[in-house]
Image (cartoon, rainbow, N blue to C red; front, side, top):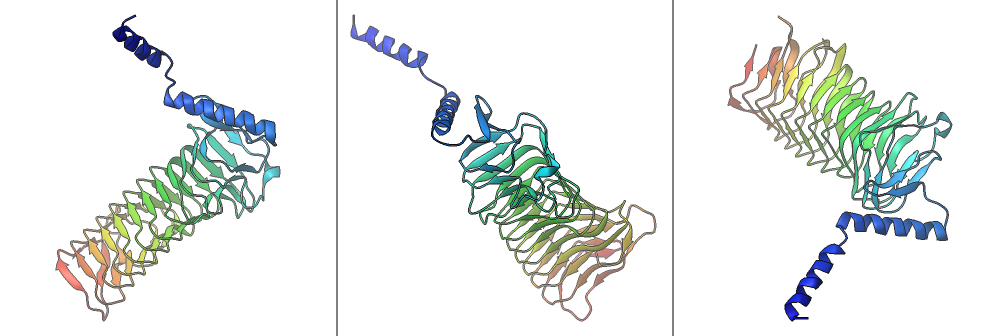
Length: 341
């Protein structure tokens, strides 16, 4: 047989016996699972080709202590007898874990506990594509990110009865979020982007650290507060706060730190308005093109934008307020275009 024919046959054999990458990964996972079952207690998951490791949430708590792709293939309503588990009903302790909910929902009343939590130093965590609901005991939390390495949360539908806390540079994006008490981001470098956020009490969101990004969200407060920034150099752009159906909003946009940028944010007033719409308590902050408007004829806030420290910059802001811009004895840089109505 000629050399050219041998080359062709070798190439054909390579094509016929090449295993796709995804299938190879599935095969490796199945082999690893079989080995684990032979040498230790069974894990609360089963490898399914095309899905990854499908969780069985029957016996709680579930501890995900190995890296990999995890999934659910049905809705789960966890039993009340599993409440009050610390640190949580489902615990992610390993690095490099992706949990894909595939459009399904995990719901529970976790009691004084958390439904889904990352712990220790777990990092490179991604949770996506489904629902997490915790209701209705005081202390019941849907998601808690306690690892200082944060997590990536996206395309989720979340309800949390009590406050969710996120450590590390957690990102929460492209989701429908309903919080009774609110969310708190405790570290720097977090992001909250392209979400719809319904909030009842407390604040919709509080940011403690620096260099966070809050953009393109719609926040719908009912009572309590909206958003607060304790740190510096946060970017807050193109958000809509719709309070047209609120009962009372006691704190709107509160900025305590320095060198923050608030640009092109829109506030629709409603309910009882007891505080300034924008409260600026730090220095070197930039406020550009923000609007506070009323959907009701003749309704205005008492104060639109209030400054309590020197050295901020503001321009092209429109405030539907009796006192549009309250400077008191402070000194600010007015770029022009600031209008009250």
